[in-house]
Image 1 (cartoon, helix red, strand yellow):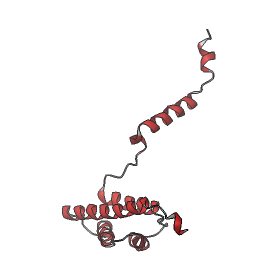
Image 2 (cartoon, rainbow, N blue to C red):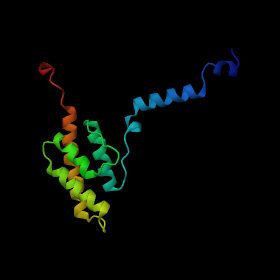
Image 3 (cartoon, rainbow, N blue to C red):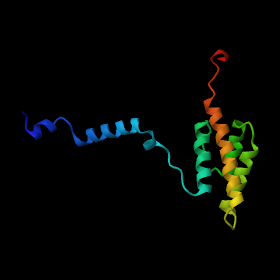
Image 4 (cartoon, one colour):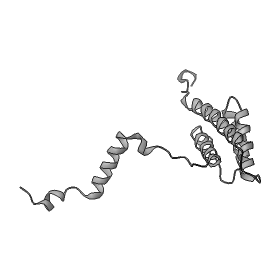
Length: 131
């Protein structure tokens, strides 16, 4: 029988910890899920950037929400939800009052329509025959 120190010599705490976290991340997908901000306007703006970047349109530094929406619009089949989203985000950021409850509901509904369109675009697979 080996002494305890000799047996533990082969595994360092950092390697063991990394292995444990790798196993946890692989078996528990909620550990690696993205956490969105609680505040609805910030959440919508961050989701717009995240889904837009995944669709291939990166948000350049210094670009306003409206400028980014103009670049992102060709990626969407229906742009009305994107325009509603931009108007309400700008009103929340630059207006003198917080959004009312019905405006927050409109913002979230417009956001969901935009995310659905961007997710649909991500799921499309390129047609190999046309290449």
